[in-house]
Image 1 (tube, rainbow over the protein chains, first blue to last red):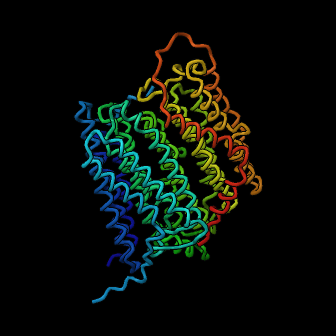
Image 2 (image 1 turned 180 degrees about the vertical axis):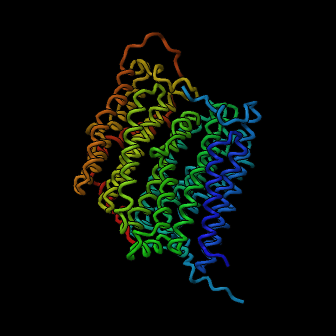
Image 3 (image 1 turned 45 degrees about the horizontal axis):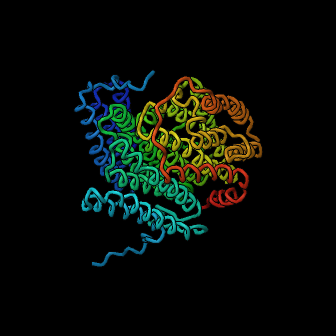
Amino acid sequence: MPPAYLFLLLSGALFTMGAVGFLVRRNPLVVFMCIELMLNAVNLAFAAESRFLNSLDGVVFAFLVITVAAAEVVVGIAIITQVYRAGRQMDVDGLDLMKE
Amino acid sequence: MKIDLSGLGIDYGAILPELIVVGTAIVVLFLDLLLPVARRRWLPAVTVVGLLAALIASLPLWGQNRAAFADTVVADSLAAFFNVLLIVITILTVLISPRFLRALDLDHGEYYILLLGATAGMMLLAAATSLMTIFLGIELLSISLYVLSGFARSVPRSQESALKYLLLGGFATGFLLYGMALIYGATGSTTLRGIAAFAAASGAAGNVLLLLGIGFLSVGLAFKASAAPFHMWTPDVYEGAPTIVTTFMSVATKSAAFAAIGRVFIATFPSISARWYFPLALIAIFSLFIGNLVAIIEDNLKRILAYSGIAHAGYILLGILPGTAAGFSASVFYIAAYAVMNFGAFAVVTALGAGGEQTADINYWRGLFYRRPFLATVMTIFMLSLAGIPPTVGFFAKLFVFQALVNAQIWAPLVVAVVMTIVSFYYYLRVVVVMLATPEEAVSEQPRVGISTSGVLGVAALATIALGVFPTTVLDWASHAASLHF
C-alpha cells in the first residue's frame, strides 16, 4: 500500500488541473467537465482518507458527492442546451450582455 | 438478521419543518400535473399553507438542543430562528409572485416547487451540524436557484444569468468539497462536534491539512454569502435573473449561508480563532470596500442593490470576527434586519417593473414620488434603513455590530466599516433624491400594484420601522439563538 500523502498529492494535482481548466477553457461544456474533474479529485481524497482512517464516513461522503453531482449535471446540461438553442456562441467569453 | 438502527438517532420531529416544506413541494408537483389551467391560482395558495404549517412546526424547536440523525442535524434555537426567518421570506415572495409571473408569462407550477426546494435546502443548511448536511443543504438550494435564475427561458439575460451562476457555483462547490475532504482527512470526522473536539486539542492550530481545509471551506461559504473577493457572480446573476427570483435569493441565500458560517467558525473552531481571524477580517474589509465603492458608479438599481448586498455581507462578517456568541448575536440580528429591508427594496423594484426590465434603470425612477407615492415612500424607508439612519432597523443592526467590535477591541475593521457606511449614504440617498426630482417627461403609466403586493410592501416597511423603534425583543431572540453550544 502506497503512503497516504501520495493519494492526497494525486488528488491535489487533479483538483488543480480542474481549477486551471475552468479558468482557461472557453467552451461551457468543457468548463463544466473541469468542475466534474474537481469533484472527482475530491472523491479520490475522500476514498483514500476513508481507507487510511479506517472510517466509512469518507466513502459515504463520496457517494453523496457522486449523487449530487449527477443532479447538478442534469440541471447544468439543460441550461447549457438552452443557451445553445438560442443561437448563442458556445463560448463563455461571449456571455457579456450585462457588462457595461 | 435484524439491523440495529438505534444508534443512528432517527428523530423525524427534529426535521419536521424541512419535511413539511419538501412534502409541500411534492404536493404542488402533483397538483401542477392534475389541476386544469383555470385552477392555477391554487398552487400559490397550497404553497403558502404548507409554509405556514412548517412555520408552526418550527416554533417548538425554540430552546431545544436536540441533535438527530447521528449528529448531522440539530434542532436548536438557531435553526428555529432561521427557519422562521426563511419561511417568512418565502411566504412574502410567494404572495407577490403570481402577478409578476403572469406579467412575464412565466406562470408555471415549477416555480413554486423550485422555490420550496430552495427553502428546504436553506433550512437544512441552517440546521446542519455535519459537513455532509452542510454540503447537501448548499447544493439543494443552489441547484434550485440555478434553474430559478434561468426561469425566463427565452430571455437571453436570464439564460446568461443561469449559466454564469451554474458554472461559478459549481466551481465554488468544488472548493467547498475539497476543503471538507481535507478537514475530514485531518480530523477523521465529518460531524462538526467531532471536528470541534479535534480542533480543541493541542496542536490543531499547527495542523496544515486542517488549516488548508478551513481555507477552502471558507471560500465556498463566502461565495454563497457573496462576500468579496468571491462576489464576481453576484451583480450579473442578480441583474439577469427575474426580479422576483433576485428578491428571494438575495436575502434567503445570504441568511442561510451565514447561519452555516456561524456554526462553522463560532461553534466549531473557536479554539483556533487566532488562525482564521485575519483572513476573515480581510474578506470583510474587501466586501465593505468593493460593495460600497462600486455601488456608487452603477446606474442599474438591481446592480446597486447587488453591490449593496456584498457590502452588507461585510458588515455581517464583522460580527463573526470576535469569535464569540455575543458577536455572533449581532450578526444574527443584522441578518434579520437585512432580510426585512433588502427584501422590501427588491420587492419595490419587482412591483414597479411587473416584469419589465427597463424599470431597473435609475432614470426610470425620476419623479416617482409624484407618479407612485406609495411605492416611493416605502422605497425611501428601505433605502434609509439600508444606509443605517435611525429610527430604522438598519441603524441598530450596524450599531450592534460596531458595539460587538468595540467590546472585542477590534479597531481596524471597525474604522473601515464606519468610513464605508458614510460612503454608502451617497448611493442610497441618490435613489431617494432621484425619486424626488421633477420628472423630465411623462412616463407611460404602469398598472397599479395589487392588494397582496402593497400588503407585503406595507408589512416590510412597517417591520423596518417597528424593529428600529423596538429592537430589544428581536435582539433578545438573536442572542438566545446565537448562544451555540455543542
